[in-house]
Structures are given as structure tokens and as C-alpha cells.
Image (tube, rainbow, N blue to C red):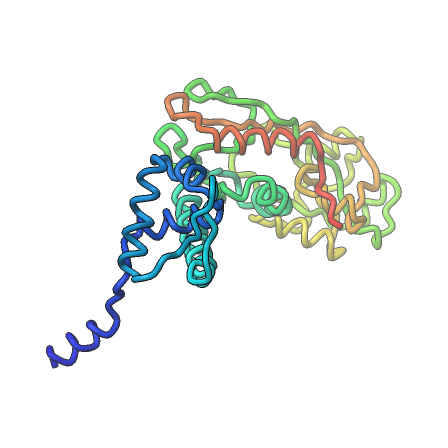
Length: 311
């Protein structure tokens, strides 16, 4: 068995001249000049001449016609040139691909599941088109991710703040309003008396949370029970319920931008309630790399543009 393996290996052994000699020939033949080949390969013309002479001796035939101030591949050289050019081009493409892969960067961005699904995901294609070299990892969780410790490079935090141990940049102030399917035909606040209220779960109890209780008080509707209706622990499910016509949701206008733009949801009436600011935060001691800066710039620009537009 060992003898068989040795025989197979022997059949597949490549008996080739030196790679340096082949490179020298390919460059000289392509440029029709030892001097220009030497400039490309960062060696002397004498070194190019020496390498080609070694190659011709190894093959057993001349490869060039030597002319005044010019060398031209002869018939044998023209047979060898395209094979080497294609081979070196293949080497270059493979090495370039490996180099690009090794230089790829990963940035982890944390946000709530609802914000990830409804705001970030529709905008990912634009980011990938602009920065295909950055692999963006979206960490969708309701937990407060430790950006100081490196669990995420950046995080979107919704709340009043402050964030004394973090570098925080306000991106937007959210607003809340009743949203419903246009099929319900709502036209004035009083129409809520015959509609189902849709509630989203607030993870943190805060008297400033924009709830139906606050909205009904602002609208002067004292005869509607602010606790009645449908409740959802996931805000994306509350949006889906509103789109399906199951009721009226008091919801973040940031998260229903796409539905409002396409008309699957409408704001039938006011008033609007001001929510909390949305901050982009990062750890103060974490390195601010170019890929992280690129994600920051993308988020700023995306907030400035508003809802994504699809072709």
C-alpha cells in the first residue's frame, strides 16, 4: 500500500522551473522589455536576464528574439506566455480574496427585538451595499447589554437617561399616536368608544411611559377604560394586530414608519404623546475603530432620512 501511495504521489509531482524564473519571463514577455519587467518585480534588469537564461536552459530552448532595446517572445515563448499570465492572474485573484476576507470587520449593535425587526432590518440592505466589508451583528434583546465590557460595540437605548458611564448620543425623540388599519374607518377620537385598544408591554414601569391612560386623559375621553383591550408582550405583534384590523394601537411612530409610508396603517387622529429619546451608546474605553464609526454614521443618516423606500 505504501508503495502504491508513493507511486501515485510521484505521478502528481510537478517538475517545474523556479517560480522566480517563470515570473521574470512572464513580465518580460508581457512588456517586451527586461527593464520594465525589472521595474515591476523590483529587481535589476541583470537579474531578469539571469532568471530567463536559467529558464531557457531548464526548458532546453530559447524563448525570446533579442532585438535592439527590445525582446519579443518567439514561437515557444508565445506558447508559454498565456498559460503563465492566466496562472499568475488566478494566483492574484485568490490571494486578493483571502486578503479581503482577513480584513473584514465585525460590529455588534444591540437593540430591542422590536426595534431590530421594525427599524433596523428594513435598512440593512442599504448598509450592506454601502459597506460590504463590514459584517454587522444585530443583538436583539430586552436585556441591557454591557457595552463597557464589550458584549456589543454599540447599543440603542430607549429612555430618559442619563448614561453617566457611557458615551451617549441622542438620535431621535420618539412620538406615540393611535395607529390603525384604514379599514376600520376611524375619523375622530370618540370613535375609540367602539374600538378595541391594543396595548404593548412596557418592560420598565415609569409614570412617564406613553400609555393609553395618558393618551385618553390628554384627549379628554374619560368614559373609556384605559385597561381594556388586547395586550401584547412583543410590540411587533401589537403592530401586526393593528395591521390586521384587530384594534387601535398606541404605538411608537418610529417603529411603524414603513406601515405609515405604505398605507397599511394610518394615524386617524391626534393627539400625539412625546416618548423618550433614543440614544446611541458605547463604552468610553472601547476603541472607536473605523468600522464602528461607519455604523454610527449610517445610523445618523438613516434617522435623518426616515422611513426606507423600496423600489
